[in-house]
Length: 418
Image 1 (tube, rainbow, N blue to C red):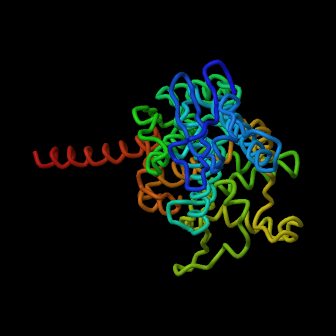
Image 2: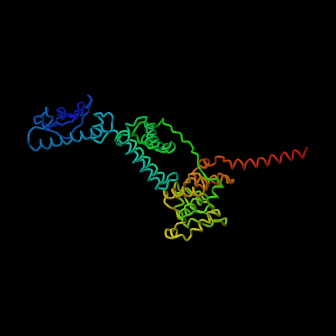
Image 3: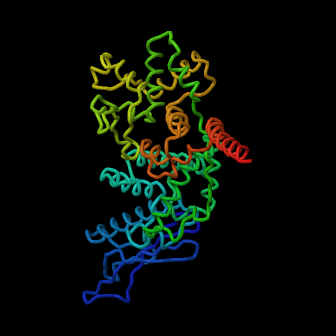
């Protein structure tokens, strides 16, 4: 039976393996582009009851009907297997068709199957509270999988592509898609490319592929300019009167984040139980970060305490046992644009700028040791905190005042001594 001009399937009788009862096994031969392979169908028949020209059993008896029905089923299964393989592989061999049909040989997996397999492992590790993993990390990998799926559909018209067929240009092609078609900035694209590299490394370890197609691919992450409020802007924002209650609440939540460093989700989840009297007699916010489960315990400054006190009897806070009236992330960021305009701040206020303001303006510019800042921010490594620690003009000015004072003192001593 011809599947196409280069491929054929036929059944033949292997008379050399004839058994004592006179029956010989029926074999199936697959030929593709002149190369062939074969396997036993598991059926036997007496040689005289076999039609070699048709590749089928003779007659209308029950044995012939059963054998021919089984052979037809095998043909249909092989054709379906070939069609599936040819839709994904650029080149299909007879051995691939046989192995896939019989479920033996190399493990042919699609890219998305490997992503699904790896992401499930990530999820289980996150649920087991592995120190370096969180459910947020697993969710990022799920988003990464969707990005790869969209890329494959855009490039090939289908997401069904075997991982064995991925070319070494995958990294560059995926990067081009992310930055042009999806219009994602390079640093964000880098995160999805890093996820893909990790999944391909897993595929190598599982021996699905001999080498990673992204092994030589490099994508350099550039630390972005992290926008933050200056001390003057922060104080002005806190004292600016808002024309509407909803904007006043958003402003207060934002200022609270500027004095605690909590990200949006951490602030949203806060309850009165998170405020605890500490060993030094002050009140602390005791909280593990949603992102990585690291502790992010912060001593509460006066402004943060005043904001907490202000919303103790807020209907929303009392009804849902919340510390502050936090809107949805989308609405929160939208309202912040209005707040910035009213306060005369020409910066894009987001949940991230509040965290950056806490790290730089509130802590580091006021000589908080970077080790303590890292602890309060809930970072895994002090190297992460160092991203925030780039010297600012305020810090330079303060340091230079100290330098000037010391130099002036030495000059005065020298002058007096002379």
